[in-house]
Length: 405
Image 1: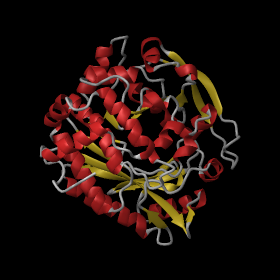
Image 2: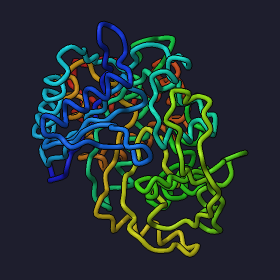
Image 3: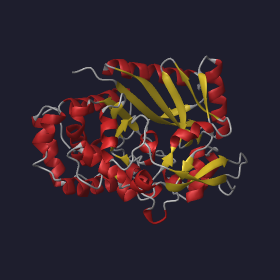
Image 4: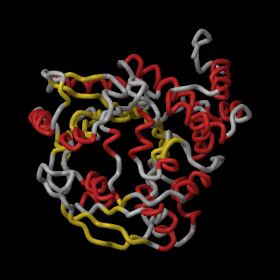
């Protein structure tokens, strides 16, 4: 295997006496981590401790106070990455002896009232409230998200391979612990314009240019490079406008959040914001276009103007010092052994993407992959084309001959 960094994010559900953790519990846990030598990760608006970082990585509040996201530092060896994740998990367990961590993809069906009782004030949730998003649908959904470095020449084949195999892996690893609440189905209710922003990109991808074209067609999201200053900006995407292309080529009006109430009435409190004008640039392009597809290309486009030249975006991504794929369609495994097995499968997919893409592209079209993805997301069902993909991957040695679906 060529040298490439491998990172990992693991979400686990946290309870105390069978009750989901609360904001008060979370504050206690972070204080314990800081006392043990970790550094607090704070919310820029109100100083709330969202998590803590240390030598093995960091853990952070995700979605609400009962979900902990453990993020391992990346290594160029899968065993080293997973060992590091295990060490981070061991530290977290050492400071939470009275709590229980649940390895599940869907802990319970979502409940909106419970969501607001367990949520803390952050910049993200101010947008949720203002836009009236159904973000609460994600409150009990968890995931395992590998992050795998790739090189510029690998981009087209890796993206196509991961998207065309997505329906198969949603069926295998997507996480349907509660059949009437499929984990990935929740994203369709939680994300505005989810038909474009989740699952597979709308336009078929054969090149990096195709990927960028899909990003430009999305409704504009946020300006995240201002959040550290307590100036997170977001867009009122009524009727799907403005799109990323509108912001990039013409500029658009956004809303800058300058104040978030810290009372317990998060559901109804009014946030403070004003209008601001945003011009798309290389620095803010990633967050402007942030998708929630099953596979997301993560990059740092640097700084500079775009000036209506889409080629500037593509060239900036090609030169990015940070370039990796983040997998978003995998549920939380049942244990670390299963996590290791799943991760190895995706490392093998990326390593052999050129060969696999050439082999499976004649078997399943982009439209067929989209159709079968909908089946898999809704109830875990596996379409006929994806069954062919599985048989082919087994012939290529990605699965053991005795494995079945």
